[in-house]
Amino acid sequence: MNGADNVDVAHLESLADSLIQSHDDLLKALIAQRKRHHLTQETVAERMGVSQPTVASFERYDANPTLSTIRRYALAVGASIRHEVEDACCAVGDEAFTAIVAPGSTRWERRTPVEWSWSSGSTKAEYVLA
Image 1 (spheres, helix red, strand yellow):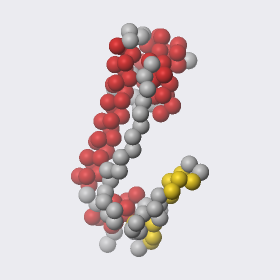
Image 2 (tube, one colour):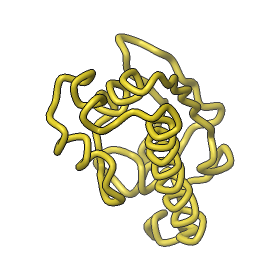
Image 3 (cartoon, helix red, strand yellow):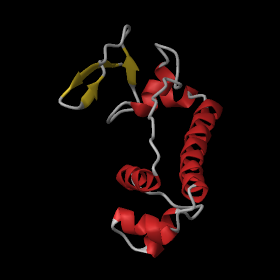
Image 4 (cartoon, helix red, strand yellow):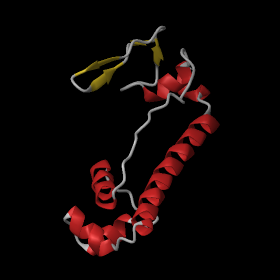
């Protein structure tokens, strides 16, 4: 039996919705900052080194800017951004979740305890094939 068959889809959908909402809230807060400081899109564009239509595109409700663009916009409007990563996926030993996120297989399970290490800018987790 494939571990992905047991995945709590409602939990994953809730997590996805939360990530989308956080992204939308971030963009709305940056746009509100621009307006609060009475900055025009033209001024922000000049500060970012782009055109006004590029800023207008950034501010559209369906925009999906890169992190570097978000940082440049924040700098242009005088805002700072804090990034926070929260473990909201699952409990240790949740093989069902691990099965869908493991590289190259749907039959991986997490060893306990999981050891995370930072090496050359990458995160490594210890996994074993079931």
